[in-house]
Image (tube, rainbow, N blue to C red; front, side):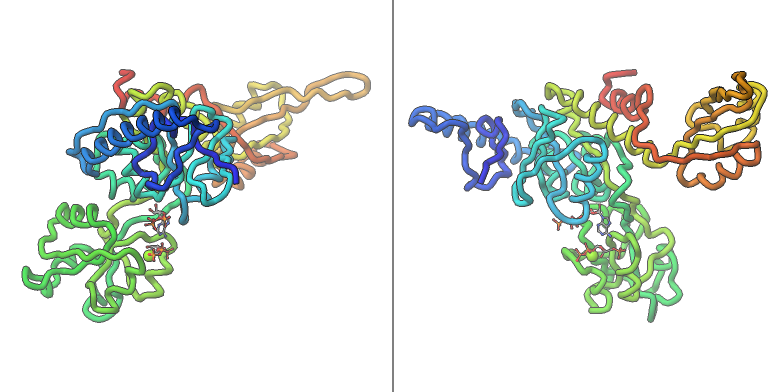
Length: 407
Ligand SMILES: Nc1ncnc2c1ncn2[C@@H]1O[C@H](COP(=O)(O)OP(=O)(O)OP(=O)(O)O)[C@@H](O)[C@H]1O
Ligand SMILES: O=P(O)(O)OC[C@H]1O[C@H](OP(=O)(O)OP(=O)(O)O)[C@H](O)[C@@H]1O
Ligand SMILES: [Mg+2]
């Protein structure tokens, strides 16, 4: 079995590694170098552990010192519904995660030689961004909010990676005393809840749940936690309602539960997150995040668009442009590209047609084709777009402003 471990593991083993994790040495160690590396590791483990101990996942925790290491660390979900999609997204950005086997928790991206990937559970990605053991990560916004608890060290670099869509929502039974209850307000005002007998909410979101209820002025409420199959709790008599993630809504429906107006705590999808300290203090981190962000933006922007090419009879490029721009869905990203089509007739070269090229949102495709035809477009060709690299990405500017590196 090949052992793919990052070069820096010798220098700074993560406190998250199990005690049985072998200490890797590229060449057979001498007794001295082995002892030396053990001592070095021990010292560094102690400092890493100290940094973790000084950090708890809340906004007021002191920031640990940035531990020196060569590689930038990107955390990706190790399993579950976000894992494959994260790797696929990076692949679509021409960043190929090379994982030797699915049980290996570290991998490389050859296109980003200074970056190593660590596979972790989503909640641990957030925790490790806070402890300084990861620099970047892909997680759901729900996990970020729950475990990040508004800690200022966490920065959302890209908030819409286009997968992992779901929302965190309160759901109540659709039968019995709840039959006519359709909003959070109505739920809160039910006479059943009192100090002695509060509304019982089953949830895995023990930070966001109480915060949301407090923000909504709901006083008589208690929370119980469970790791899964929360939808069973009301029917089992364990809870009155649940607060859980919903995507298709099937699980709620199958368990006779319904969402209520005002009961959505947050909308979520996958996001690229970074540690502020890593970006400002770790050499190379900002360049790496810039490259990942550019690739993501180029891919995600293109993903929603088609290239449309059509021919249009006209007297001049200007006249064709005026016709095209009279239609609301044909303005493209900056405007149509219009070029003359040279035809040879009776030995003479003439320009009777112009080719127009525009990008149109996938959602507006058919509408755009109709509008093109309405202004004389013919021979409409449509092809997918792979990447759109803009001059610069707005998110990069936002990030620099957030880091106070730009006004
Ligand atoms: N229907 C859904 N239910 C739950 N999570 C969803 C759903 N749709 C998208 N997600 C996203 O997937 C994440 C959950 O992924 P996963 O199931 O791997 O993690 P987890 O259950 O939190 O992990 P663990 O089992 O280690 O506690 C959520 O945090 C959310 O961002
Ligand atoms: O709206 P839906 O598409 O039905 O998805 C929502 C369900 O998916 C998740 O559960 P998961 O499948 O992760 O199982 P678990 O709750 O037992 O962990 C979530 O906790 C909901 O129960
Ligand atoms: Mg569930």
